Image (cartoon, rainbow, N blue to C red; front, side, top):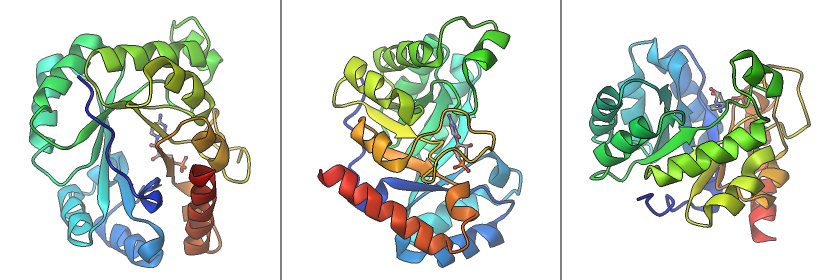
Length: 241
Ligand code: C5P
């Protein structure tokens, strides 16, 4: 069964994507953003540095929450093994792909003894309907995302990663206790980059997101800390409405 959502303070609903090549840069960002960010997502780029688990410990030492975004997808026994192992680290969210019910069920069972919440990736926010068709998947993203969210919930996964565009339909399909985390957030509107299903901050929360993942809009801002603070202010307004 899906666990209750991770308890999140208002300022833990912004998750910064620490897409950097190594620990030195990760520590610089954690320092630069200070109190404006309390939850960090570490993914594949950092994994390749060999310093991934040191950064996990750094985050824990600094009292930050950590999201391991490595999007596991393999046979059920292998995914169960990595989930079981990661549950022993200071990890709050961890992603697996939301494609294969038996794999999701094995992962959920392997995670039963840990506080880490598993999130299933539905359809990457960099993909649109045409991308799905080119992969042999018929149906529009919203339909596929909702179908995968229902399958994830039935398999005992704690929540999903999806675009804010689909947060409303997912919330209606899965109810209040299922976590929805939305990347592809573009506070200033579409940025013409690789994200195709992007929304703004307020829309994601109005439609039922628990948290958002933001990378480049903060990393590439002239003043990243001010950008993060502005997003935090927008989140606070959105969730206290
Ligand atoms: O820079 P940007 O804000 O686009 O970063 C989004 C982050 O969220 C990236 O680290 C990307 O890997 C991640 N992500 C995503 N779409 C998903 C799952 C994760 O963009 N469906």
